Length: 146
Image 1 (cartoon, helix red, strand yellow):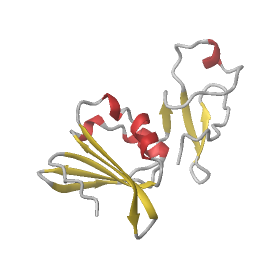
Image 2 (spheres, helix red, strand yellow):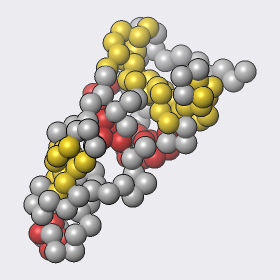
Image 3 (cartoon, helix red, strand yellow):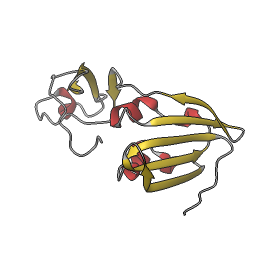
Image 4 (cartoon, rainbow, N blue to C red):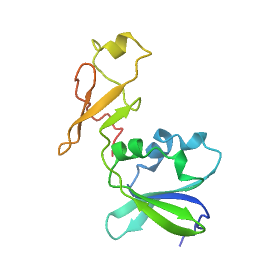
């Protein structure tokens, strides 16, 4: 059995779809943080069969919950203080995502004016549909989301 020690203060991202942890690591820019990060891939899970887990030893304020909710709102965020889970955060689909994905419409103003923020709005929560704020182009999954 593989043993990865607990963390004193930080957070644990649990119930990540198997194989998605590296994508989440990069999209949350965890590689830019000066803290310890452990990625566990393909851990056994009673609920999911296999899952990934990311353990991060640094304060939770380094984590963008909107980006994480956009990628996969089924991930569990456990906040650790003093070696204990002190809070579990539920993720939700954010109402908007800013500069996470790019509009693919070549006629969109964001294609012409590069300095404009890329903003996508949640237009259908049941279908998890996002549309560009400017041209209403629907975001289609290019392997970014779980």
